[in-house]
Image (cartoon, rainbow, N blue to C red; front, side):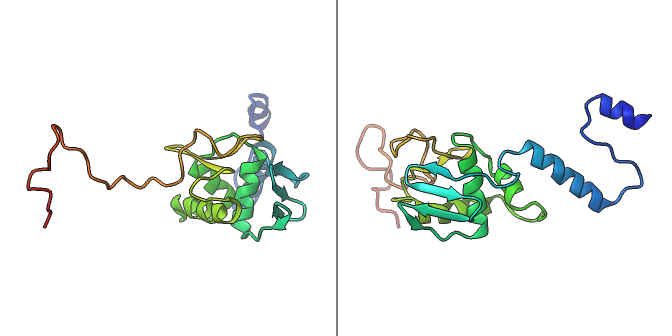
Length: 178
């Protein structure tokens, strides 16, 4: 009776105790395949400008040339290209890349993004495909969106240049730091 009530209240599934942890993991994976875009079977080619991703062939080309990607880079690009314009947090992307590894830090996504940009961007310091949304995550450019976009560049290095001193002149101490 509890199973029927749970399902009638909107549950997608119901697991009865005692249960196998393996069965539980497989049930969760099945639900995630239904609700995550791009998590199901591979579809047709994804295109944006000269960049083409072919999931069925596990192949990426840029201006007709094959781009060698690691499996993680491919999955990351596939995820981003499947939903152009959608912002993915690092945690979202980690969940898609590392389903079973719990000890992965979120900055590994930044490393993958950097490597991916080196391979697909004309100028990785001014990306046109994989864009950073500062403080949120990453998104893939929408079709027709050019290099003159409003997203912030990947680099978040602080400005180490001299700061103006109110009223002009030199900073206290004469400006010669020893």
